[in-house]
Image 1 (cartoon, rainbow, N blue to C red):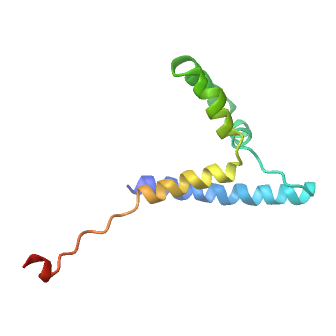
Image 2 (cartoon, one colour):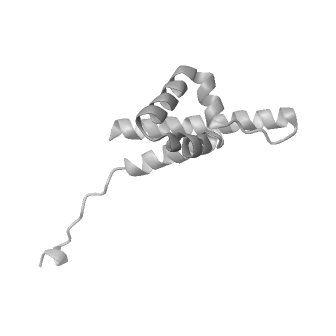
Image 3 (cartoon, rainbow, N blue to C red):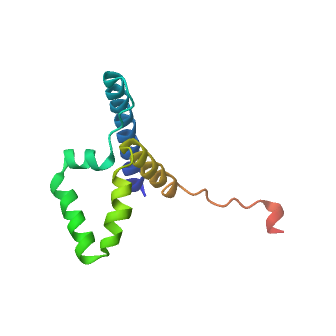
Length: 106
């Protein structure tokens, strides 16, 4: 659970950094210029992105890559990183232990 929460926190931090970078880029270009998730992934690790595409198209369903994954990779990177990070943080949060009162036991 701790690992899951730390990964979620790291993704949220990455979303904040990506949002800041998009803001600076937009100020420099004087227009809204968000960086797509696919573009960021390609800058960081082009081989893993190409490998994922090959695996999805060859061993899963080709239609899963072209409309679904491509649509997801075109969204702003800060949005996807933030949503996945928030989802992990919420899914891996500590559950409150049930508290039994004396009235409930009688």
